[in-house]
Image (cartoon, rainbow, N blue to C red; front, side):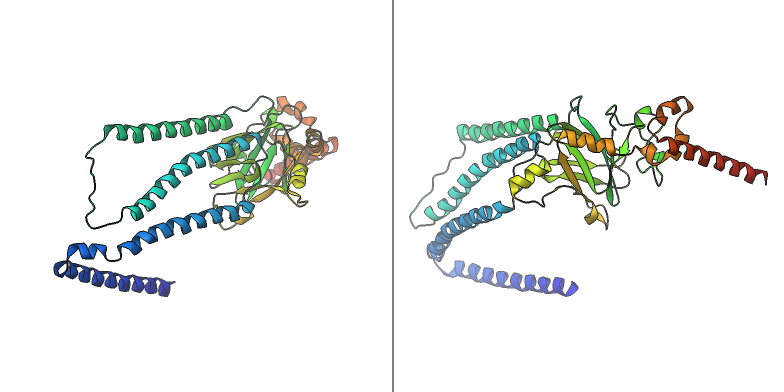
Length: 369
C-alpha cells in the first residue's frame, strides 16, 4: 500500500512540474507574440471537443442507465413503497430535465461562441426580471419536492392503524430477534433491558400481563400477513443497526436506547413475487445496512409474506415464551399467576414448580451448612 501511495505522489509531482513548465512557456509567448494570434491557437479544436464530450458523454450516460435497468428492484411490494418510488422518479425528472438543458447550453455555447477575431460581447450589469425568474422558480420547485416528501414520510412514521399486526425486531451482534404480540390481544408486553439474560434475550417484563401470550419468532425467518398493516417496533441491544427490506422499501435505523418504528402494508405474498419474477427461489429479505462489526455480513434473514389464514395458523402453532421457558413463571407476580398459567402446558407448570421448590430446598440446605 505504501509503495502505491509513493508512486501516485511521484506521478503528481511529475505532472505538477510539467504544468509549471508549460505555464512558463505560455507566459513567455505572451511577451513575444501577438495576443490575438495566441488566443486563436487550438481554439477550434477545443471548441469541437466540447461538442464531442457532450455527445459521447450523453450517449454513455444513456447507455449506462439502460444497461443497469435489469439490476433495478422490481415494482415495490408495499403500498407506501410504490408511492416512495413515484416520488423518487418525479424528483429525478424535475432535477434531470433542467440539468440536461443547462449543460447542453453550456457545452454548445462554448463551441458556438468560441473566440473569433473582431467579435465583441454584450454585458448586462444587472437584470432584475431574470434574477427574479431564476430565484422564484427553483424556490417553488424545491418547496414542492420538500412538501410532497414530508407528507409521505409523515404517513409512514405516524401512528399505525389500530388493527396493525405488531412485531418487535431487535438487532444484536449478529442477528435479529423477533417477538410477536401473540394471538389474543395483539399487544406486546413491556420490556426492561435489566431483565435480559441467556433465554430472555429482549428483556420481556413478565409483570405485564400483555407479555404472557408473546412468542419469539425463529431466527431463520420472519412471518407477516399480506394486505394487513404491520407495525415494526425496532430496537437495538448493543450497537447501531438498520432494518432494511428492499422489496418493500422499508428502512429504519435500530438505535440503542431509542426505540424507532415503521409501519407498512405488504400487498404481494412471497408466492406472488415468485410468479411475477418467474423465480421459484425468490425470498424477501431483511438486511442490516449499518456496519455493526465483523459479523455484519450475517445479519440477514428471510421474510415470508403469506395470506392471513396461513399467518394465523402459523402463529397458533408457536409456543409462547412462558411455554418455552416455564421456569420464568417465578418472575410473574402472584396476583397474575393464574392468568399466566393458561399459556403454559400443565406438565411444564408442574416441572417448573418442582424445579423451583428443589432450588429453594437446596438453597436452604446450603445455607444451613
